[in-house]
Image (tube, rainbow, N blue to C red; front, side, top):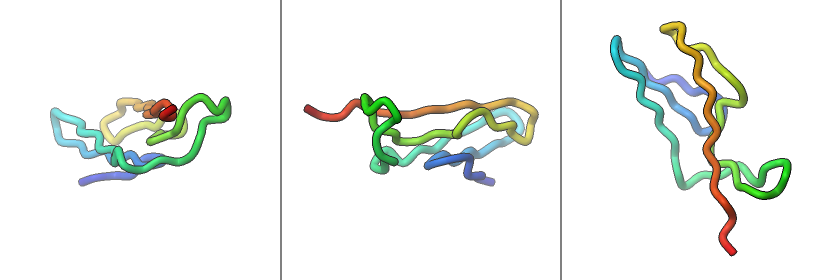
Amino acid sequence: MATAHGNNVKVTQTKAKITIEIDATKDFGTSKSGKTIQVASTRGNVKLDNGLVLGLNCYKYPED
């Protein structure tokens, strides 16, 4: 079962594996510093069903 965590992050868990899905075509604007474009984030650490903690930021640099 996939669960959404934050912006553009879907996590699927089985007994032994965790799969993280990010849509690379989306973006959520520039970062606070303006140096990168946010693609996905858990917006801090999130506790998963199995007790593990996930913290994820995915970003890209603007094209010149």
